[in-house]
Structure formats: structure tokens, C-alpha cells
Length: 137
Image (cartoon, rainbow, N blue to C red; front, side, top):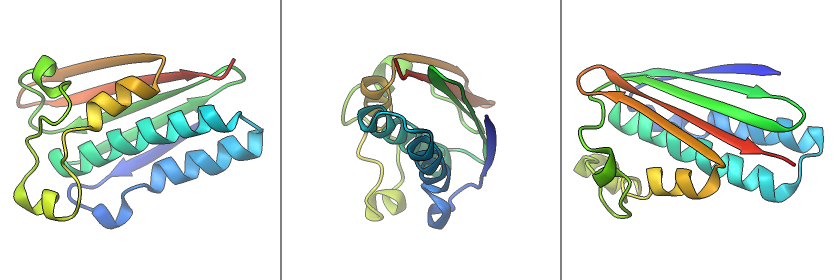
């Protein structure tokens, strides 16, 4: 199964649309609830990061019998220092984003904790692609 979702910059009203859709699909497929939770947490965090920090992008999700691969690709500022961005509590979120309850600096650390594989490709001034894999077996 393949799904594609668009990401609109700053559209927090739509935040969680992709992760909610994927959650419904995984429940329908009978995936273990613990793996559904891990998947949804990782995808939601990546989705929020792209909405808050980037200028738009896409989410591509591929589900097969043993795993889910989620690719969040954005057009944006990129991540200048991935090691710093992976530290809990570090954030470049704007004051407006923080006022909405986002931007606590837990996005990438939560993604790492909830995935079996994580790959981050980023180029400053171009964008970031986050590839996340969760195995179901």
C-alpha cells in the first residue's frame, strides 16, 4: 500500500492528518497496537516539524506485511547541525509555534526512539528528507 500526503507550511489545522490516516489503516490491517503507537508518534513528530519549520513538502508512506516506511520530504531551511537537533529540548521553533504547544525540541529525539531505522538527509537552504522505518515482526 502506498499513500501520499501534502504538507502545507504553517497549516497546524491539518497537523496529524497523515498520522491519523495511517493509524486507521494499520488498525484495519491488524498491526500490533504497540507498533501502531510507535509509527504514529514518529510520523506525527515528522509531520509537525515539516509544518513548523519548512515551506511545504510531502509525506510518502509504504506499508507491506512486515514494515512501514515513511518519508517526509520538505522544502525549507534544512538542519544546520543534526547532532544538536537530536538533543532533547533543543529547538528553533518560533515563539508563535511554541505558543501553540509545539516546538519543545522533542521531535527528532521522539522519532529516533520510536523507529527501527532513521535516516536524515538535509541540505541547508534546500530542505530535509526524513526516512523512518518501523518493523512489525
